[in-house]
Length: 190
Image 1 (cartoon, rainbow, N blue to C red):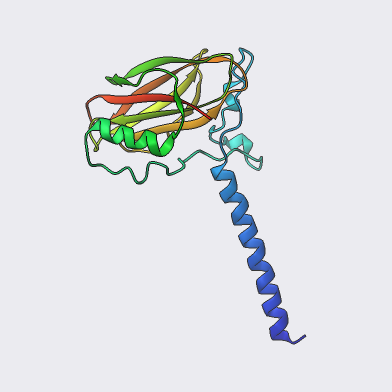
Image 2 (image 1 turned 60 degrees about the vertical axis):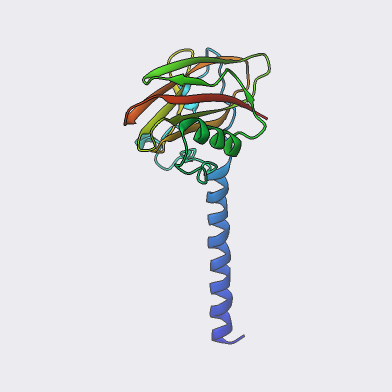
C-alpha cells in the first residue's frame, strides 16, 4: 500500500471513530429520563437532570435535559390557548391529562399524583405573553426539586420524567420575565 493509501485509510478510520463518538453523545442527549425512585428513601440527587458537580469531575454524569425540540414549530402567533393546544399536540400526543388544564397566576403550584400505575409525566406551561419567560419545576413530596425547565421562553416543559412507584408531587410555575397568567397541563405519557 502506498503512503497516500495509508493516510486515507487512517483518516477514514479516525472519521468513523469521531462519528461513532458523536452518535453516542447524541443518543445520550435524546434518551428519556430514567425512572426516579419516588419512595421516601429516594434521593433527589438521583434526579436525571442534576447538573454535574465539581466533585463529580471525571465521573460519568447524566446530561442536562435541554428539550427535545417538539415545540419548535409551534410559533408565537395566536392566543395562549391556541399555542398551548399546539404544544400539547406536538409534545404530548395521545397522552392522558393527569388533572384538568389550569390557568395559573405565577408564582403558583399544582398538586399532582400518579396512582398505583407508576409511569412517566410531562409538564407543559405556556405563558399568556410570548415575550415572557415561564418556568416550571417538578418537586417531590419532601420539597426537593426533581427536574426543572432549563430553557428560556414562553413555553416551559419538563419530561418525560418516569417514576418507578406510585408517587405524589407538585409542579411550581413561575415567570422569570414578563407578566400575565400561564396555562399549565400535566400529562401521563404512554
